[in-house]
Length: 343
View 1 (cartoon, rainbow, N blue to C red):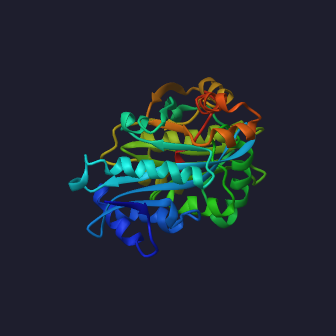
View 2: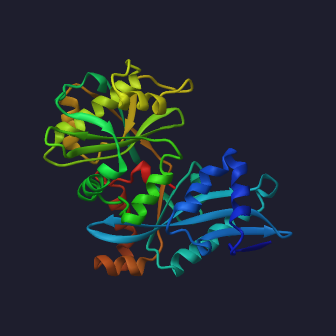
């Protein structure tokens, strides 16, 4: 078996293989075609008899850690043809991935999986990740002078980017330049998302939110707000509460939200899943305004230190404590990796 990086012209064959996973070739194609950091040398393949039978992708990302911008290699799109499983194929790809991650200068790595024991063999370690179930958001006490509207790229893009840049400074947050923002808007919803902004009487955007229906759950996958505009983000959550509760829509934004976030397969009614634990002030305002919050820990969030020497030099540490520092940072309750940045 040949294990190597992909060659020019093999992208379609890789996508054909990945299409066997969910029966949705377009899901993977959106990342392949739109991710500005996609490179064939970060796409790994295992071949037998001239055919690609297994693949994995390294996603080139930058994250914030203690005010530093750190190169992070995400591992995703890992799939082996059913006829070639349990032969060490995926293991060979992971060994190659570790070589490439180090060679390409990545300092840390992240992946999402249910196969915890498999990836632990190669040095990734699970870190608790907290989601919050919001109940009763449709009853929040809010400023009804704030308008919640559908995101308009030409009108709202610059303000939303500004809010994201100022709000999403938590450890583990991905850093987006303009190219990464524009790419994220093309693939994060895969393909449908409910993207709204809150505008006050001054006409400026005080908050925004991006939501999807994921595995039957309405997920608030990213949001941001100006620190002096709590009322704006509360109005956004109130809007989303009305949407997921199935209340008769009163405007275009609520109608669009119900089309995206509610379906006959939805597992819940009136519950919105969100990231809030990193922001205790926001949680307090939600609770004080009439929302019930319940935290839920997930354990499929795995990190790995790739280069102790580079990571230690960045933070002026002894290399022997670099791994401990990484897990302290990404495992902190104040750390955050948005669902919108998943791969």
